Structures are given as C-alpha cells and as structure tokens.
Amino acid sequence: MARRATLRRSVMMIVLAAATTTACITGSAPRMVGTGDVVADRQRIMRLQGEQMTDIQNKIKAGGNIEGIAGNAEVLAITSMQITSLFPEGSLTDKSNAKPEIWVRWGEFEATARNMTIWSERLRDAAKNKDQTAVADVLKDYGRVTCVSCHDTFRKPLPRS
Image (cartoon, rainbow, N blue to C red):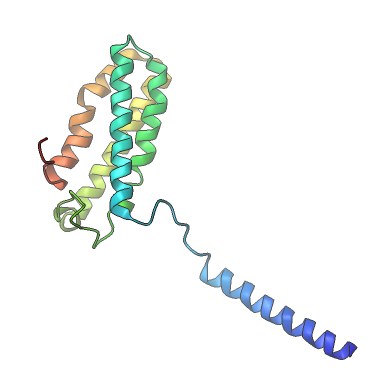
C-alpha cells in the first residue's frame, strides 16, 4: 500500500514537472486586452483620444491648466503605442472605417502611429514643465501632424450627419 502511494506521488510529480517544463518552454498564454473585437477596441481607443484632445482644448480655453494637460497627453502617448496592434491583417470589416492602404503601406502607418507618440510625449513634457509657450507650439501643429495625417491617408471619410 505504501509503495503504491509512493508510486502515485512519483507519477504525479513527473507529470507536474513535465507540465511546468512545457509551460516554461512554450511561454505563457497571451494576455487578452480589450473585448476581442479589434474593430470595436480601436474605435474605443480613437474615441478616448478624441476626448483627451477635447479636454486639452477646454483647459487651454479656460485659461490654462497647463500642468493638467500632461495627464491627457500621457493618455494620448500610451494609446498611440497600441494603435498598430489594433490593426491586424484581415481586420477590415463593414464596421471599420479603415482603408486597405493601412496594410499595403504598413511601414508608413507604423511611422504615423510612432509620430503621434513622439508628439504626445513632447506635449506631456512641455505641460509637466509648465511651459505655456512650448505647449502652444506643440498644439499648433499637433492635430495636423498626428490625427489628420493618419486619417487623411488611412481612414475612409466619415459620413456627414
């Protein structure tokens, strides 16, 4: 009886060790971020980015909570780093406003997303330093060199309401 229990424990340890080794070799399962619907997820991120820009503009118009803009700019920087992962090949659907040019000109698309990260970080740093002139200089061109440059090239025109 004791031999059987020892044998059973040994077998269980071998199975456990094999499973652990396999998990370590193959890596862990990919983490899921979002809903699993990449079109809905990217539209959500784009809405969030639009809300951040609206909040930035409202802070400027209200007389300059310059330092408060840093948090908005940080959200823009972080979300811009996720953009390319939300456009896997084959994710062009009827719900999407993306143009096929994204995948044909992938390098340019990646560069546009990186550009948004760079400009967002510039805005964040200027706001953290309470440098009103630098914030104004970044904002003067921000929309054109980030959102507009990407949307003009890679997004279908939105229907007019």
